[in-house]
Image 1 (cartoon, one colour):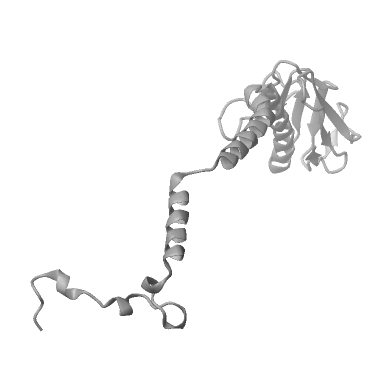
Image 2 (spheres, helix red, strand yellow; image 1 turned 180 degrees about the horizontal axis):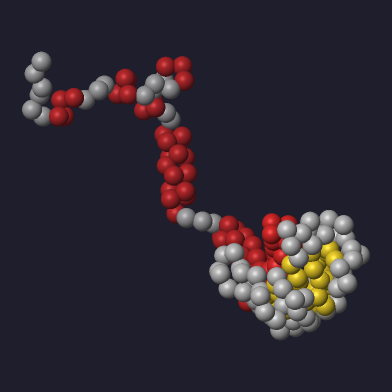
Length: 198
């Protein structure tokens, strides 16, 4: 088979190009219809309408008004982070007591939560943080306090005990905040099971 030198010889007759409804070709459309299609394509190529732009600006304004103060003021985020860390320290102490089958202490002050393995004071022998390797303690940001303060312990079965070594009642550690828009939270330790939850 030989190929022509000039590619223009490969032209297909217009009647075979595009066949529309009922066998009519696209080239057979009325001039008004072709002009309308061309105008629609030109409008689409120009960009956004004024209504679309104003709508987007209004929506972005609402989002900025609602999310802006939360993203700028990080104190509430720091308070929530401390709450999560404090709850994790207490929960980790309970799990460690079960794993080691011996008593583990939790010391709550007005601004910190610590977990230790000796002497009911948490002044020494703090548990090691599993991720960082540092002492297992967390300190409250300014404006956040804990109550009631005291030392608590878990026995080898994970149950909550009082200072005398007797089973304790359920303890609720309140996390209060003076930060605007930051709600009060609590950490609850169940009596018989030692289950730690919000």
